[in-house]
Image (tube, rainbow, N blue to C red; front, side, top):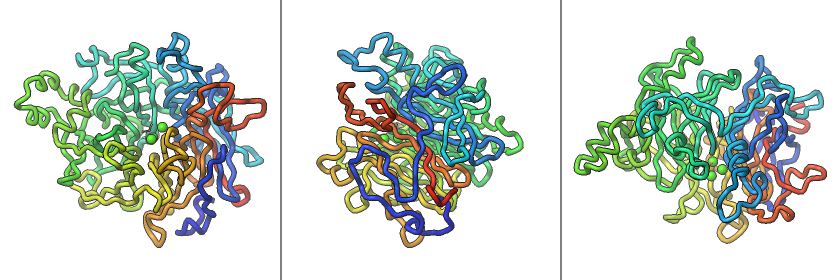
Length: 502
Ligand code: FEO
Ligand code: CA
Ligand code: CA
Ligand code: CA
């Protein structure tokens, strides 16, 4: 039972050992139900669940902890969707599948009277958002020449992690978009943004350019002391920056979804870890930094250009290149900010670390900060390559790992075995100690941990099991081991206490 009233993690589950088993292995007294797997029909229109399950967000229906909408990101496709790609060039049919199965799903889920979580494929809310869905652009890059004047764009893909807003919508992050854009002949400046969707409103689809265009991992939203909205974001690329966006206006709860306008106007900052300052990624600062470089003055003619070519702009103004910043979470207890720096083999950070930022005065709107390495990956801690994060109400950080499937179970990664889910207390006697809660199937990474409000259920994605499969007749994983099937499927599971919760 996740929300058990104790401050010691070990008080409520017995940690598991690392394993190479082709299964989702959990501690005693916990079970998982496969809620939706790749290609399952999700609604009466016959739309199908996408591939590469990543971020999850659960939205209760009428306040229920056992029925709600689950929003899931679909990051990419593998051989199980496309079949073998000859000479690295996809056929028309493969390109269509790639655009269809990426994006997002909104599905309706419920726990039945026997305690089993299921998808309700009769749902009127359930729908796909994918490479063919139209989005309105907001913010400084809307309509600029670099985006070919576009005020709306077609499609979202490479949707990695995300975040829930204060007004109950989802932000979904376009991460490694370049490959799909290039293969499909789509303008790459239309992707690499933060997308906003409202699970309860099919017509509400936006891309917020003020949050910058880069290899977006996720968003973590909070409030500055003065009520402005703050959004922390990682850029999952080697030697890339940590960002935060601070809105110009202030949050007003009574306005509900209209607060989304706050994401259209504000200041984007990059972290300078040498000075402990958030440096503005603005046209003014970029032009100052580019004063002896006329070619840059041409490239950066407006704030729209600055957000479009954000990675270059952030380095120009003094953002510090870091080791692949992935998920970021704000501690609900003390406003410290946790960042997974997953790894960077270009300079020997093989197992990554979790950085903790202390904003000046504990104010998320502060422009100065200090930081520490909260936990380091490696043999001593038992985990490598931290990726997505979630907090529980005990102040424990739930951390999934992403050792690439080409490195898993060999060399310096051998002792970690398959990727897992770990629990790390952020205070108390077990602070910083990683205890393993789950181990994923062969060649997968676990992604998108998300609790129901009562913390009796944890949604989790199993992404790319059997990723190294070269021959579909001989897959390296067959999880979730459906009867009669000989292929691996990515899927979302619901984890709950076997006896304790029910
Ligand atoms: Fe899609 Fe950075 O993980
Ligand atoms: Ca991933
Ligand atoms: Ca990730
Ligand atoms: Ca990763």
